[in-house]
Amino acid sequence: MIKNNSKYIKLAIDTYGADNGEFVIINGCDIISKNLDIFFIFIGNKKVIDPLIKKTKNIKYYSIVNTLNYVKADEKGSEAIRSGKNTSMRMAIDLVKNGKADAVISAGNTGALLSIAYILLRTIEGITRPAMTAYFPTKNGETAMLDLGANIECDSKNLIDFALMGSAFSRIVLKSNNPSVGLLNVGVEAQKGNTVLQEAASYFTNTDNKINYFGFVEGDGIAEGDVDVIVTDGFSGNIALKTAEGTSKLVTTLLEKSFKSSIFSKLGYLLAKNGLKKMKNRVNPSKYNGAVLLGLNGIVVKSHGNTDSEGFSNAVKVGYEMVKGNFISDLKNQISF
Image 1 (cartoon, rainbow, N blue to C red):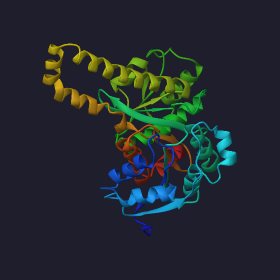
Image 2: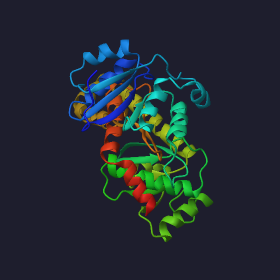
Image 3: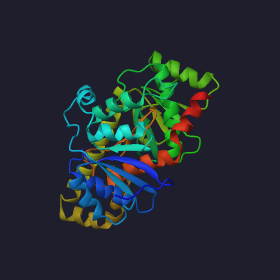
Image 4: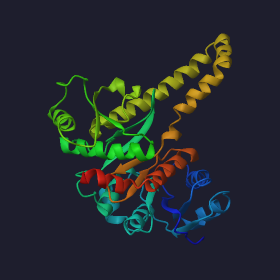
């Protein structure tokens, strides 16, 4: 155990939850800590994680909170709240609640993480519901989208809140200057969409607010990168995200099969190898791992459970950037305006 230094950003790391075990999480923290001032608080089985930490090259400032309890992958959020007081996930969020950590990163059960975080941290005053956001590559850079499943049904006030939160996220994590915001819709025409979308669009267009409103965005425009932030309800957002992920995997699989189909295809692969390598790196899911539950009185980052060490390191980086950029203070200023 190494004593804390106040200049370091304190990140609570739930070491359970990764499909491939604690090594992925510890190694991911080692990757990202090379050039960043981070004090890690690892919550988990000390007998397992301590030897792993001692084998790393870059982790110097850390402490370990020992627990053998964790939230199971199939455990419901309500069950985790009732019985999970001593689980690694609950203890990590408690550290944020009590001001002993600046953010929490977990690869554990998504529903449980959302439920426990909401109960313990509560929403920022002025925000009606928290929203899950993530970002992905587009033709023009990177775009954030929310909500991705935390709120199946939304009203116009929820969408307005999401726009505020998404704008703050884009500024701080994606370094966007005056990020543009679009509402996901079935058409770009002003008259398209249901009452909720029409009310939200009217607010952005006709009131004095800090949102750089672009207009409506269709599903096929998500990858164009015309806007920095796409706002939608959790039902549509989750479907759009999973569709994009599935399409990416399909394209990769088809390319691999095509280049293996004949001797000429294999020769073509050799000629296009460098370009394909760049494309693969551009859409590598590990580079975009780290969804954030926005709108709470604390920073909560959700990593994919099946990610690799590079992916987990990116989730840690997202949490670090949000703390360093004073995300919560920034959002509160937007709300007060």
